[in-house]
Image (cartoon, rainbow, N blue to C red; front, side, top):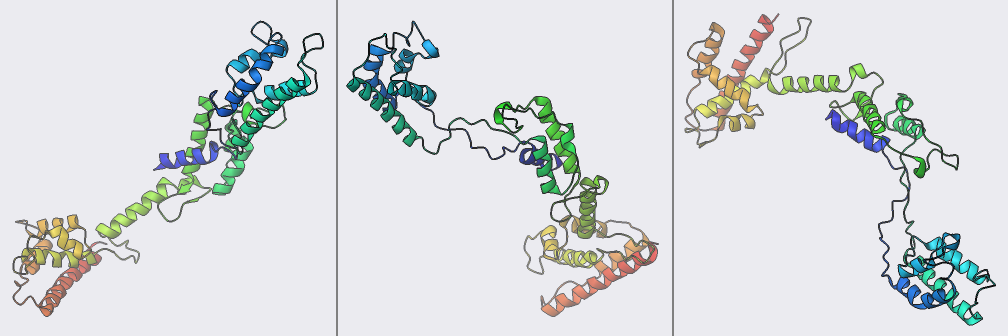
Length: 345
């Protein structure tokens, strides 16, 4: 349970991706309609006027239009195509010394490129493309942890210093990294936070004193529940009263019904099932049955066995008879309680 809590804290605090758009799930392909249209309409003119300087032999300005046309991909080369349109519109390319397209050819080339890019933009509207995911910075981690738990533990001081990007911010995804050692520090920090959690005694909360929270209070709570459900505790000698002894009367009655289950028409009902009807633990009822049928016991236990064994066999199966038997079992339970209160100190 504590490991699960620590893992939850690590994933919800340390490794939270803080509000960045998710990476694009669309995979651009060279066979899309827009890229095929670009190849069909623009490729001949680009080959005629541009491949000489921007082809397989020369790549001026690091632009290879021949390769871009042979395998067009608008998503990854969008800005390059925008540059091509710009220099064509402004007549910066082709250079003056090279052969020039006619005004109609230039308009056709620009229009086909703009049409392909425009259609692509409309198709991909709302998709940010590839986005670098980022995790919380140390400061963001501290603030988030304080908001979740109300504690100021200073755990962020044990992390690696955040790198600052060219923009001057430490939360730029491209400058963030997560080493194995950093991940281990996040997990260790989450375990420390988990040690402050109070679990098992009501709603989840966090305390500044880890010595009286977490496993300790949870264990105390569970032990207390075990005593309340399955047994009794001796008096403290300082006015404390035992609790749980009321189960004995109910277990005596369940054992009596099990003993005479044939006469009562209970068929093949087991003792644990009959005990459950009395809100008594089945294993406790079975233990009591074993004690009641042991051959030899102490004087006090022998007295209890004698009283229980002398409970009469059912005759009428009436409500009054059941009430009378239950009263006898209650009296026997009260006797045990008196012994416990008197002898325990």
